[in-house]
Length: 226
Image (cartoon, rainbow, N blue to C red; front, top):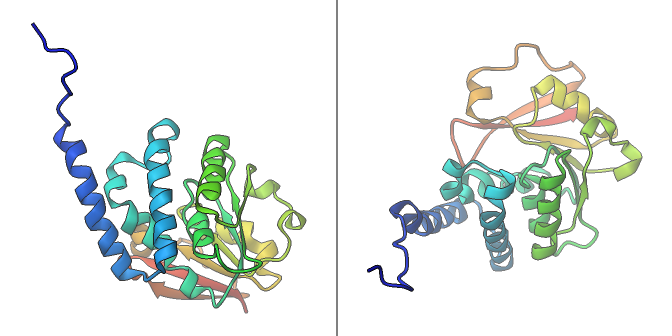
C-alpha cells in the first residue's frame, strides 16, 4: 500500500537549480556592481520570471540557471555605456532584456522612464507585472516597433535592442530617435561578432564596438549620428 501524504522526491535537475542560480547571481554581481536596493529588485524580477517562464515561453529553460549573468548582468552593463541617459526606448523587449533591467536600475532616478516595446501581449503582461513588482519606471507598449510613432514616446536619450534584428534593420527602426540625438546601444552577441553584418551601416552613423564585460567574445555597438 502506498503511503498517503508522502512528498514526491525532487528531481536532481530541480534540486540543483537554486544552487546554480545562486552561484550565477554572485558571479553576475561581481561583474556589474549595483546597489543593494537594485539587487533586491533584480531578485524580485527573477522570482517573477521563474513563475511566468513556462506559461509564456519568456526565456529558454536551458538559460534560466544562468539568468543573472546571461540576461540581467548582460543588460545591466548598458547603463554605464549610456553617458547618463535617463529616457530610454527598448525595441523588442521580450522578457525585459535589456529594457526592464535598465528601468530597475533607474528606479530611484527622478524623471527616468524606459519605454519597452513588444508586439506579444503575453510578454507585455509579464513586463507590466514585473514593472509593478520592482517599482521600475517602465511604460509598456504592446505594438510592433514600426507602428510606434515618435510622438508616442517623445524624445529619448538612448535606444536599445537585444537579439532583435540585423543591424541595418535595427538602425532603420531606431532612426527617428537616433536622428534627433539619441545614442544607440545594441548588444550583438557572439554570432554577430564572428559573422559581421553583410552590409555596412549608413555612413552618417558613427559606430563604436565595445567588448562586453560579461562575455569577452561578445560586443556592444554604440551608435551615434555623425
